Length: 474
Ligand SMILES: Cc1cc2nc3c(=O)[nH]c(=O)nc-3n(C[C@H](O)[C@H](O)[C@H](O)COP(=O)(O)OP(=O)(O)OC[C@H]3O[C@@H](n4cnc5c(N)ncnc54)[C@H](O)[C@@H]3O)c2cc1C
Ligand code: FES
Ligand code: FES
Image (cartoon, rainbow, N blue to C red; front, side):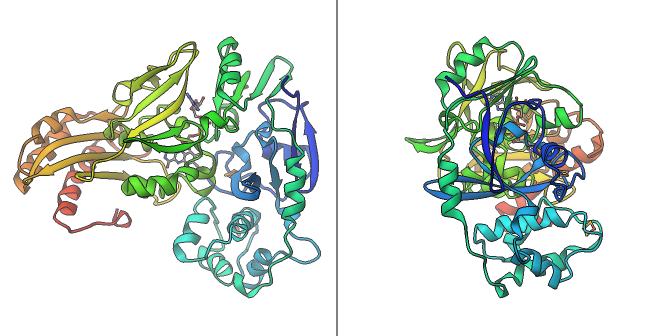
């Protein structure tokens, strides 16, 4: 029998709850029901970091910490976790990250400060070395409009001066282990929130549902609630389903469970597809990567979803589950704007990416206005084998150029078996700029998109000639 409520730790307090609306966010809960107003609301869309708190989960008998945006995290996803808020981290004295912020003048109006402090706290708990690269990564989801970032970064760099406080981890692990990890069904008025531990139980309830919404990180779905003011009726949270949370390499393929958080796949991805890994360094922010999944990126079917062109270029297959299980190729999966081959009572179970041959060159070019936490204007993935200076095989897939992520068929056909030289690249640039009729929107104009997509072929040509251009040059 599934439990009818969730249980979690709010700082050190055990909470059992089932009486709030299933659409309640963690931020609403903290501020409106627990009077914990240190956690702020800035944007309610995961962009500013003012609402950052930290989650702790037991993994291999240790606590694993991650920062999250509470504004887009739904309350009932907290089952079996500890939620740490800014009110908790100071006891008799300020916590070292807070003291360091004070000593380094890291705050002015203070609105963003609790969010920064919690991102810094997550970094401190994970014992991350405060190099510039790591600081930029961990603070990528926090915005400050008045202090400026140098002093905030100094606060992290100078953290080693302060004595670390005694850890309470063994007590917390004990408390969290007491919470039963079974299925949960919350029934509230006419709505339902499901948590399943395995695929079999998920399928049973999912097939019977009327109006289901699949939820993993909620970094897309929750905006339906916070921005479009929708009330979701039946939410299936996949984040605790063991059969959907994994990454493994078997024979010549990488298999990724659709609900596995991006940050949990990065170390393996780095080994097999370093260029794909590098792209994820620019995917959302630390808070977003901590919870967002590949299944959610594919499920959103946005024409500017960053992983989609790369997965198509790598010839990825999806395992879809429902009444029956079936395998589809990602290159056939997207039909029209946000329409896919996924049927009503189906979900994505697994993503299968063929391991790249050593002979192949993979390129993942993301063009956006900001380095961090920004959606692409244009994306290009290239997967090619060049033999005897000729394109033996070539896949070019573009994002932001059409209603779906799209293969540049004409450009591929032109380049296949052609010699790679300035002349052929110049001709390919003209073909690719005519191959698409992109929209003009807030991110960029139609002309800009066409210009950029053809210039990316120049970039490829430059890199091929070893004039390596780093992602920071764009
Ligand atoms: C601040 C911010 C920055 C972002 N930056 C980027 C970025 O740089 N690049 C980028 O591509 N995206 C970005 N996004 C969008 C989003 O983070 C990604 O699309 C992410 O991968 C979604 O994953 P999720 O687990 O949070 O999905 P959710 O929000 O949980 O779900 C998204 C959609 O997919 C469906 N879904 C989830 N799981 C499945 C499944 N197993 N089968 C079928 N459907 C499913 C859901 O029902 C929902 O419709 C950003 C979002 C925010 C808020
Ligand atoms: S309020 Fe801006 S990220 Fe949550
Ligand atoms: S201190 Fe004012 S927004 Fe950062």
